[in-house]
Image (cartoon, rainbow, N blue to C red):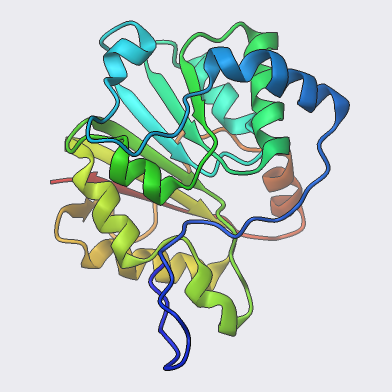
Length: 232
């Protein structure tokens, strides 16, 4: 997010990701080619934000997910909660293809995707006070200290995200890196528009499915920290 500027380094825009190349399988590529025109939303930086009710064809709670990875959790949550609409944001094509494939296999109608930087999507496509929830599950921890400035959860993004949330909406984060969990807790606690729903960290809500990767880590003794904050 906001990075300290070296004196002789040109000013760079805030970004929510670092683009890495990943192999796109044939099935993922077919899903992107066939399904992205149906379930994808092109990035727009015009003056008018998305009409989310029109996008999904109904009035229902709208929940955004930043960085859905391979889409396993996104699809499971959307299938379990057909009463909600989910807008997923991801930049990496393998993940986009994987989630599109799951949408088709499960027959989901309450998921849409934007393949673009989340900061710009929030700035240009999401109107203030329109979201009923936001998920950020297991963002890249950037474990080396010199890379901590690249972490997603920083004050500017949290303030922007909070401004797009309705009063009473929730923000749910999860990580399996303790020092990142502490940073998340500090950043979210400092945002005046948010309040912690518990004293520090929350028990994993039943609404967040346990992934295979997470279950394996727990068996090996790793911990996972969930944070659930509400919009005041």
